[in-house]
Image 1 (cartoon, rainbow, N blue to C red):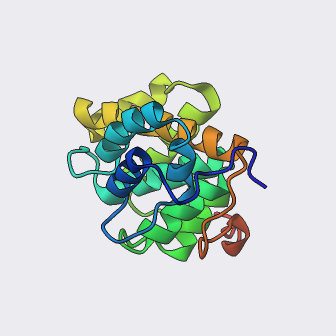
Image 2 (cartoon, rainbow, N blue to C red):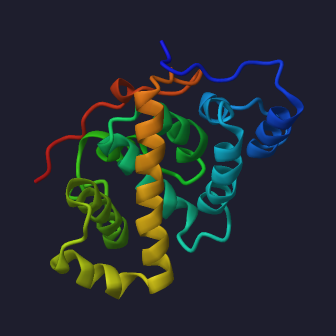
Length: 192
């Protein structure tokens, strides 16, 4: 049961306008956005940044973005936001079931990661989660593979989804209807 219940309809005109703008046309607002709507000034401020993180101006590709988000949410043990992204984006960016399982339970050395850049993104998300930093030996290949703009987007994307994960988990948001759970993706097979 949610510790802070998401806002339920009927919404105030202000909340309705904000929630409508946060979702694709015709889709009802997800629980996380309805939770944010409990604090309208905060939700309005977050909306702009969230649109950037999920928008076309982000310098990472959609697939790179979803690898980072899915990994970060899994590391934070935020089944809610992980499930939202797996349900809404994994198919669009062609993440395989093995890759989703790896992002959830495995690591960058799993055989499903054939792109060195994708494995690097996972290692960066792991380092930021574990140490709040990127070790020098990881920074060198990161800087060789990605430009400064992309690295800045990567750092803030990880931080943003830590904040989202902390909020959804601490508020005890229930999974969205039809969203997968961690258990739906078995652990990947051991590597080599």
